[in-house]
Length: 232
Image 1: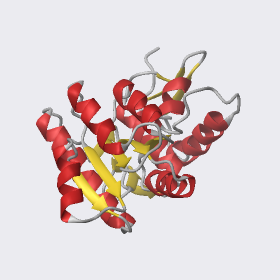
Image 2: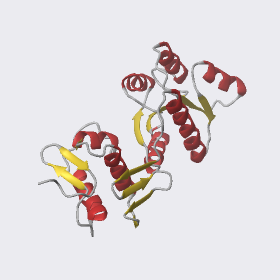
Image 3: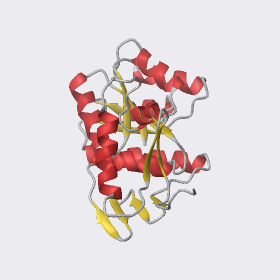
């Protein structure tokens, strides 16, 4: 999932960003209602997680404004106000779900996944849970990767990197695409973080096999394709 968290409490926001990323999702964060509204209008998100009490533009007004602009991205409202009337106001403002604080992250994650699945179903998109390229297989649900039946153990970031490459198998994936969708960076930090992770991933995926699957396209990016020799 690609999520936008609109939360002004820095500690709470940092916790949510870290937890969702550890669960394998891409996350952006806005610290006030106006910034959140701007990002929600411009970004292609699966779910918005919106705190009700926000500076500059409160959560309910933010959601109403999005709905007035015909932006239908699912919204889950978080709030310390948990009475029935409060939840009703949140839903009538255009929220799709309402979770009172305090909450368990496991419940928040489950509710968010439900909203994302509903969105995918409503837009005619199917959520792919497994990818196969040649003899390489990746299962998103079990977080299991195998090549030619041999299990390969990956770190969370390596798993996300491989998933993104396999999702775009046969296509050149640029550094910018990887930074935005795997690292959640919207700028080039001028580091070799991508090169290091691709090198580690390549050593795990290609080691012991005659033909490599992960290739560097000089000046462009990376591509993953079946382990077949290139035509001469």
